[in-house]
Length: 347
Ligand SMILES: [Zn+2]
Image: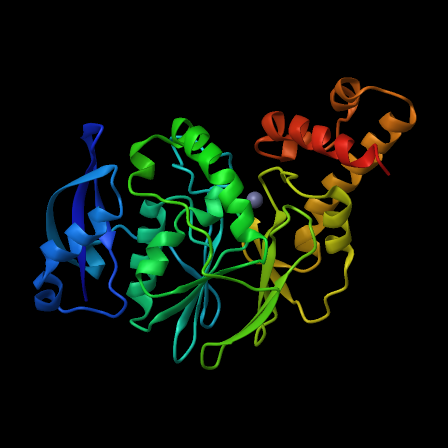
């Protein structure tokens, strides 16, 4: 199986270049890859006006950079991201990503933080299966989960997300494209372009042949566009960022809504793949740390509001006892406390 690679450089910074993979919807022989390569590259560059091309080549699947995928149960694969805040060392590749392979088609759960990460996930998938990638399911809007989506659309997948995902990405993308490059480096994001989903879904069933996925949008919790994916045959639930481990949860939706989601009974779920941290984990034990942190946050901020403390004082004094167990605590906890105060003062 061969893939077209294009060396692309930033038009404004011609020394900043990277090889980009232009995926074909179905596997190509070397001859098929080489036929029309220049035309395919030109057509792709036309949609990326910030880039200039410097030649193409065709490469075999096993020569491409590929993410590590581990099998959770037969046909369900997971890539574990680095449980840390995005930085230049991890290039933003911090989220867990999922792949479900049926007998007819493949679905991907979250696209990674950049086109480069999505390409490495695509290459890893192609080491396992040549089947068509029918769907990319984006669990929510945050860049570490959504920024690689474009690559999978080019590979032929329909991009699905919660009904409010498109509005979330549209309202935040411009700000993220300013704030994200200084965190992870410009080169890491070369060719990356946030896109809205092709379709919003509140509930949907996808049959991949011997593997059935149930998609369900949540009420506002981590964000207002969280979507979970259950692999029905094994009871494996991809929670997106409704569950964190290792990296401190970040509140960008509703604290009470999130605790409500975590408190629901789910007898069909045996294990979860959280958005961050080790995967898989048993349910509900694997969500206990997230629930414990958010519960204490609510208790502390409610107490501060009841005592008449201003927000600045409440943020300073809210101090969950397990701070040392979380990555990103110093950056994310003050933001969480501030968001919680703004939400809870109107209870
Ligand atoms: Zn998130």
